[in-house]
Length: 446
Image 1 (cartoon, helix red, strand yellow):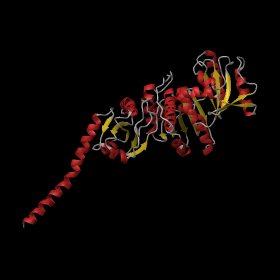
Image 2 (cartoon, rainbow, N blue to C red; image 1 turned 90 degrees about the vertical axis):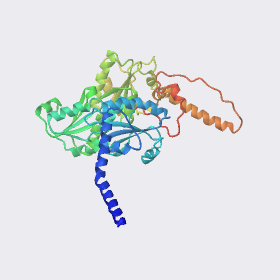
Image 3 (spheres, helix red, strand yellow; image 1 turned 120 degrees about the horizontal axis):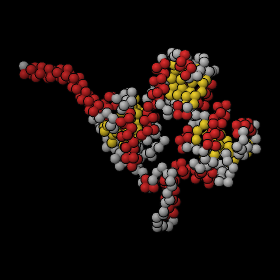
Image 4 (tube, rainbow, N blue to C red; image 1 turned 90 degrees about the horizontal axis):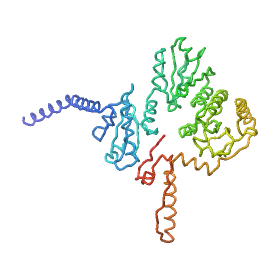
C-alpha cells in the first residue's frame, strides 16, 4: 500500500512538472526578452546561459566572438558600440552582441571559431560569417544592405519614394519598371553587397516623368551620391542584363581613392585613367565633365581621374613627374600594365572632347605602347595603401626567419633598429609591432 502511495505521488509530481514546464520556460524567455529589450541599442554581453536565447529572440543579430587579450578585438569594440545604437533604430532592427569565446569555449567550438575577432550574423537563427567592413559607419551601411530583401517589390509611387529614401546614397539603386522580378532576381543575389534592387509593379505617369523613361519594361540605375542615372530598355536576356548591371555599379567617373581601388578590383573592364595637375581646380572640373560624357558613350571602360597634387605617389607609377605635361591619359589594366596611345601623350586646352574621343579610338585601333608600372613608384603607392606598419611587419617576419636560419651556423646578437613613420599609415607603429596571439585575426578596414 505504501509503495502504491509513493508511486501515485511521483506520478502526480511528474504530471505537475510537465504541465507547468511550458509556463516556467515561457516566463524565463519573457524575462530574457525584457532584459534584452532594456539593453536595446547597446552591445549585449552574452554567455553560455543566454546565448541561444539571444539568437532565437532576434531576427537579425551580429555576434562578435572575441577574446579579452586580443588587441584587434579591443580596437573593434568601440566601433561596435557606435554601430549598435544606430542599427537598433532601423525599421528592421539589427542587434549586436559579443561573447568571450576564449572563456566560453563550448559556444566557440559549436560555431567553429578559430580566431579572434570573428563576426557572424545570425538571420532568423542561421549563422553566416561576416566579412564586411568593421568601421562603424561602413558596418551600418553594409548590414542594412545585408539584411534587406534581395528584390523589393514596389506597388505604388509612395512605395518607390520610400524605398529610394531608405536605400540612402551609399549604393547604386536599380529599379525595374514594369519588369518581371525573375529578370533580375539572380543578379540581385549575386550583386547584393554592391547595390539595391527593386521592381515597380504599379506607378503613375508622374513617376515615369520623374525617372525620365517613356516605355516599359525599363531598368533604371541611379547613383544618388553622384546625381547620375541611366536607363536600359533591353533586350532583357540574361547576358545583356548582367552586362548593364555590371557597367552601372560604378558611376560614370570617379576619383582615385583607396575605396575606389578596392571597387576596381571587382570590375573586369579596362580603366581609362586621366592624371590631372589638381583635381580640385576649375580647369580639371571642366575636363571631368567631358570625361563623363565620354564614359556615357563608352560603358565598356571605367573612367577614373587623379590629381598629381592629391596623390603624387600613385601618379608617379605611370611615369608622371612634376615636369610632365598634364593632363595625361592612359589605359590601365588595374594591375601592373598600362598603355599609352601614340600621338595622345597629353590633352591640350582646346577642343578637349575631341582629344578624348581620339584617345579612345586610338586605343581601340591598337595604336598603343604597352608599359609596366614603375616598380619603385608603385611600391611607394602600395605602401601608402596598406600602411607602413604592415610593411614593417612583413620585413620583420622575413628578418626573423633569416636570423633563425643564421643561428644554425653561428650565434648572433640581435640589436634594435629605428622604424620610420608614414602620414597615410592606417596602423600606428605601436600597433604594427604588437604581436598577434595565436588565433588573432587582422582587422578589416574596408
